[in-house]
Amino acid sequence: MNFFRKDSFMWKAVPIIAACLGIVLTGCSANHDDEVLGDTTNLPAAFIGTKPSLNFFPALEARLTNKQSAVTDSTRIVVVHSTHISALSNTDKENIKKVFDRGGAVVVIEPIKNELDTLVAHLEHHHVGHHGEVAENRHFADIYAFNNKDEHYILHDIHPDTSGGTSESKPGTIKVVDDDTNETETVTLPDTLNDEDYGAIIDPLIKWLNENAANNSKKAVRATTLEDVTQIFESWSVTQSFPVTVSGELAHVALSKADTLTKGGSIQVVTQVYPLHAFDDQTAKGDYYVMHQEVTIPNGSWYNGKWTNKHGGVHVRLCGFFMKNFNINNTLTASGKTITVLDPNPQTTVGETSYTSGIEWNLTASVTGGQDQGQPKAEATIGGGVSVSNSKTRNIQDIEVHNTGDGKAAAWQLVFNNLTSYNSNISINEPSAPARSTQMFYTDWIWRVENVSDTATDQFTMTVNLSGTTWGSAKMYSSSADYGTKSFTPGIGAQTLQILRPNRVPTGALVLTNDSTGYISGITITRKSGDAGKASYSASESVPPKGTITLWLPSGTNTYEVQVKVGNATYTSKNTTISVNRAEKKNIYYGGGSPDF
Image (cartoon, rainbow, N blue to C red):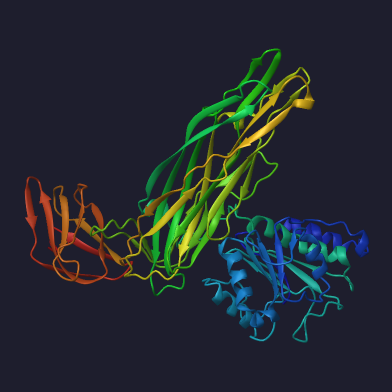
């Protein structure tokens, strides 16, 4: 059966689709030149392989208004025909994977199940939805679009297909299916579809791309199986101060002393990290570092305002220093490892009054995390995967945000607009408030480091570089003819820091239930066997009767000594064998009728 399908996690698209199909039913006609485009997307889109000769393809292509000749670091949509997948070069495959990894959309034309499965395997993706029970050697839809958040859109065959392929010249029907209500509407299509008809059918896909191919997509990830990184693991943070002195000549009247200014301040960068590790037997194995940065730029420290200096009969009107642009570039040094930046935010924002920081990301894998500081410490192991969902809209004014990262570095530039100008009252107009007052800037991204094994002790170095940050000044004497500005780019040294490696030890949860009649505390479990020697795992909380507490132990079978404080007395068990699998929860009991120790 051929039908249009809207998946349950999408918005309520049926009324929109029905309205679009209503246009088809009324027989509204237009030739290609007269077609009025419905929905369009300005997200950068690239085509890989030969563009197909399909009647609906021009409508899709016309609605991708920011087409690129090749995949770049800004590409958010990549389009490929299924028959080209098996012939893709390694470069093409990696380019598709880069778009996919950073949250963009992959659009497959006439997807064939076995070809799509090949592509998905290369993307290291765990799920492809709704291609159903179809033959391996024929396509199951006209368009299949998906991203790395398990969101997908299927446009099934526009016309009946009795020959194993699409026949676009025969009359047929489309069924609009609402997955939430299971209601369907069958629409009979005219014998021949024109460009506007195809466009009406393509428009809902474009809406989907605008929502789900942009980095700031707020679609819910599969929260039923994924654990929130920020709730499970500990983060660590480092504050770095970058002292900056801006000094120089603003103006110089002949035969007079130059007008100079020196001002100093300090830019503060706070970096917060959640280190994670996906185990060796996982498809997405390696380290992941969930990064959040808060930058404080005290522009008022360098701003001296407006003032006038006199040199004999010459009045020099001055203004400075004000911020012109701010640059921050974060790199990670991991010798011999493949580093990729995932979901860097904010994206480039020009002509807007807000930007979106934060991350909407998930990793379906068996994962552990927390900080390995060289101390025996077991952190949680999550079997189903983890997620981060903390997007936030932040207001800006007279500032452009440019995402300048290259796929390995997380980098941004702030460009300050509406700076000084000449005033006909023989004065200088002050720069916009952001250029002369304290600004906060928030960034988020994930560094993936591949080829890091469970037994690795690697610890990586991060470099924060503010080079290229520029301040400005303005001067004038008596008219617009002698108004002018200068730029000052002081040297700002880069700073490095060691990122604490994640705990890479697979663990299981030991859930201890207090079956006694009183409180217990001071719970310490000391390992007596294995390579860890006398590593101990403890909890400081008091546990009431019938209460529980969870401690994470290295997976496997080991001998432990359990110590519990009861009132003022301390009880120490004999050696106890405890066996726990990775990500398993194991229950043990203290006190009661059947204690484990």
